[in-house]
Length: 96
Image (cartoon, rainbow, N blue to C red; front, side, top):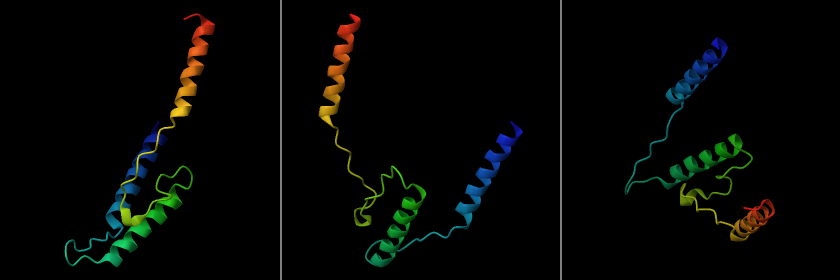
């Protein structure tokens, strides 16, 4: 228990130190917006996300120009219908 609490506290401290010490890019918004700075920031963010989450990464194929508004995944209707058919068959077998 003590070891777990120590690890949790250590993790909190590491995150706090990282947030306090990592420089943030705050470009000017509005008419004086620096697009190169925005692009560099977005590219760095997506590269870091791809490194941190290589598998099942929803940000893998993101275009930084579009921002982080990701399209909703399409629901595969055929798969859900197959599941419903299988459930119906199982219910008939069981007798419900």
